Length: 116
Ligand code: FES
Image (cartoon, rainbow, N blue to C red; front, side, top):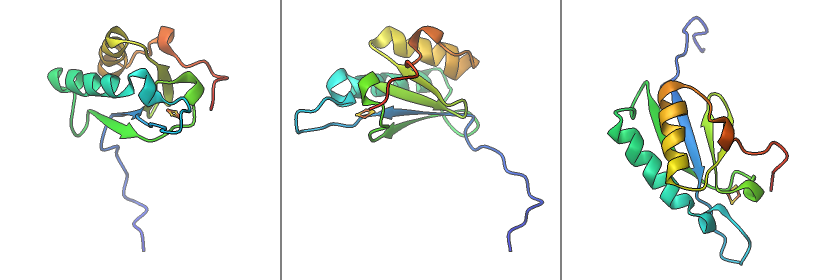
């Protein structure tokens, strides 16, 4: 029987998932818009800032997040904030503002209507 008196705590304070999906059939996908470079840079910056690890931030790869029309996309939990990034400056701002200081980067928010 599960002990319901035990409280749960989040292992990570924040998770950021990058879609790295690649389609080989010619259809558009995040991999065709430098998603891997964004992921690699984010991972590097989070590590350099001392933000990675339990109680802090985890940077993860993801498959298609079904918002391809807005790609490349990344989503931050637990806030469920979606970003569309273009270059290194965007990734730097997401790390510094959101992942480090908890402040959403409004200018990079994925338009709500964009899905697949
Ligand atoms: S290919 Fe990235 S969200 Fe679908």
